Length: 275
Image 1: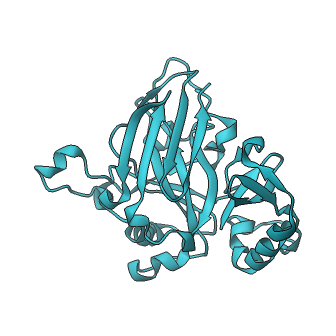
Image 2 (image 1 turned 180 degrees about the vertical axis):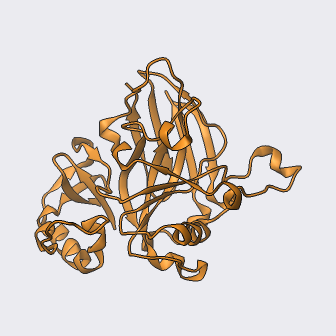
């Protein structure tokens, strides 16, 4: 199943090149009162709602995807975690690649940095270089803490494409990556059952139709189960939490007016304007 969020926070299911509105299923999410538990309410309830979503999609009126303003398919993650230097580089053929996970850990991004492809990327710090990084984003589906590698995938709800944007500078990495609009998620969320193996996914990115990045998740130094295992040893992971798995070689600068096309084979692609 492919779920998207579009226009004024409508929820849709993809059917080919069309979106079927299933927003009415949100009425079945249990009511909550302050303080609200951490995590995304839709994702926390997705297993219970899935049959209702699929049934509603059968009778809904389709709308062409091109007419929908796509937002981030995840609305309320409690945290975004990112992996550093997690791909084999071209020079790694000569030297055995070494993971930096145990030494440098993961970094955090502000959840306020999330936007969808229709919202674009605002270069909020004029005069500073902003760089693109295409990544596989893993969406956590259920609460977990100190989960083993063997059980890690049980807690994955699905996947989406991410642009992990970075501002160059001397500040701490988490700050330079947390500017508004610097985590683009989209175009939709694909459930785990539709991806046979997240370790064989091709990634690509173009700027103004010129190739910049190309890679495959088979070259990850730390695969998805390992990242979840490691992250959950430090943090409780909640439904909707995002793990950015790292970017392949080729990250580079963008300027206002550029158009980024990025995608992952088997998931989808998105077009994002830089302003």
